[in-house]
Image 1 (cartoon, rainbow, N blue to C red):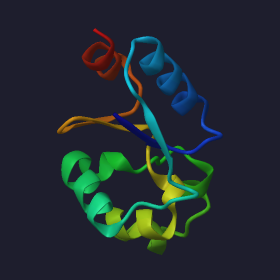
Image 2 (image 1 turned 180 degrees about the vertical axis):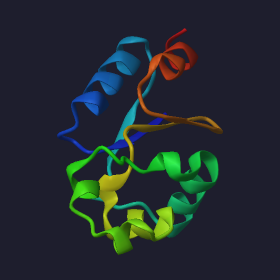
Image 3 (image 1 turned 135 degrees about the vertical axis):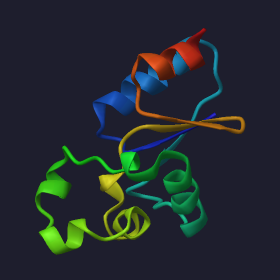
Length: 108
C-alpha cells in the first residue's frame, strides 16, 4: 500500500498510523520530495477528476484566476501540494482523502 502526501500533513500522518495499526504494510511517498510522474498525475486525474485538487489550500488561494483554469494535471505538475491528500493506492484501487468511506474500505 502506498500513501501519497506530504510529511507535514496531519491527515496523512493519521492515515498512515491507522493503516499501520490495522496491519497494512504502508509505504509513504512525499510528493514534495518526490513529485508525481506524468503517468501518475494522469492516473490520479482520470480516477478523481478535478476532485484531486485541494481548492481549500493556501496554494490554491495564491493562484491567479488564469492559473486556476489550467487542467488539473498541469496544476499538479507545477504545484504538487495542490493535490488533495492523501491518495492511497491499495492494490489496484485508489482512494482519495481520509474520510469515512476510505477508512471503511481500508480498515475493515
